[in-house]
Image (cartoon, rainbow, N blue to C red; front, side, top):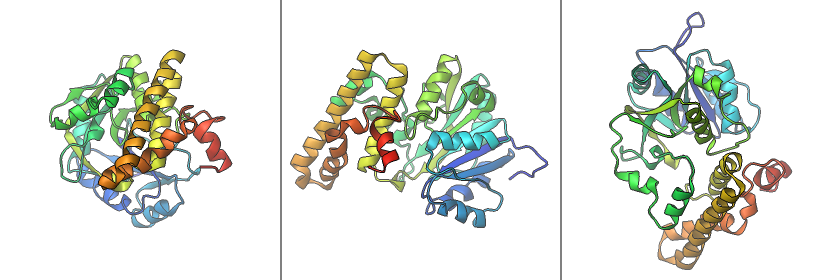
Length: 320
């Protein structure tokens, strides 16, 4: 940690949501991950307050930012960034456990690539190998079509080792460091997003401003992908809504319609396959359950996060 009289080199920002079970491992790992630079940790609790209460008692050096309710990932990080004091901002999921030297490696990467806006780490699954979350892409019709035919670039990237530094088009918001200069230039994350794709939107905007983005192969962290159910119906709906929010903000109307059609068709196929063959395997059974709402209630997500339509409108009315 850093004392109040010494400014930190990096501010570690954690937006928590019902994260009581994983937050201790996340915070305990930071000291070994950042030995060569001064740091501070800030946390905001978007959940019921239990995570913040636990951290306040167990980790008194962590700065707890007062909760504003479930305001979403973007607004939560923006609130933390406003109070952060360092020239670098490290976004870390509460279910992230950084390996020894991980933050040091990101800071060293910033020195190697000073023209970049952001430097992302490599997240690992339970087996200790890079997980698919490292393959973050800006939405495109090509990628959406490829998913329908089983040739998604995300799946094709599963065999990458991610050992080398690489310039990329987007980075995972679960483990990424940004310069304060770039963050301010882009005005932070777009708070019209509630969950998912908000970091992709930020990196898309930074790339259009001619900033570079680098993934640092030596900066590694375990990411507890099991912290949530990957086939949870609402998680899939939020993912689709996040993608459609990006599409609504950056694409023409004809491309928006194509995106909706491709996403819906993919969800409908998965729902039908899962429903028809769910008795054959637990995976197919969960597939059918998970994609049911996406397939049968597309108005939940097709408007993105329009406050007057779809998911956010239902959230306001308590109808989710």
